[in-house]
Amino acid sequence: MNPEDIKILLVDDEPDILEIISYSLKNAGYNVYTAKNGIEAVKQTEKIEPHLIILDVMMPEMDGIEACEIIRNTQKIKHTLITFLSARGEDYSQIAGFNAGADDYITKPIKPKILLSKVKSLLRRISIDQDEIIEIGNLIIDRSSYKISHEGKEINLPRKEFELLYLLASKPGKVFKREYILESVWGKDVVVGDRTIDVHIRKLREKIEHTFFKTVKGVGYKFVI
Image: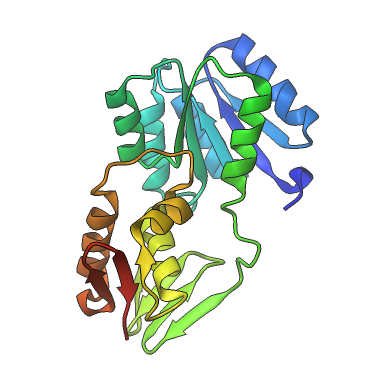
């Protein structure tokens, strides 16, 4: 997608941050919208449906963590890309961000050029072939709408679970190494716990069909029919 087709929502309670980052993003060709707190962020997201939200953590009225959780639990907008941009770099803050559903966590201060590089990296996750549909028996995975149907029943999945399912189901029988799964689903620049993949696989087994997912001990996972 071209920058002019991308909508980015920037959320921060500091006017200077909004001005500086907005200028950099607009100068790169993106359509930029702003909000000053979590409440405004949720309302703006429902209204404009941005491709990416850059979200501060500490804000008045509603903080970024709560706003992220609300967005992730709202069907219409739950698949929007979200990265936190916060001065809080502690491990527990980053873990809270990822647990709330963030795709990335960036620590302030950060140079505008590096932030733009991060933004481009995140936006690459928006697939060029979003209209592709995978059909395996009674399982239908529609990437364009993030909808899944199994035996005629519609199943709603959080973004990461969907992307993990889509990756494995794209090549049934292929063994995907853990390192490749982490890079493909979570990205090169995101640090997640070693058990993250296992937890997401367990959730998929519970929600869809446990026999679809086979563990290859010491290597990774594969999708079996």
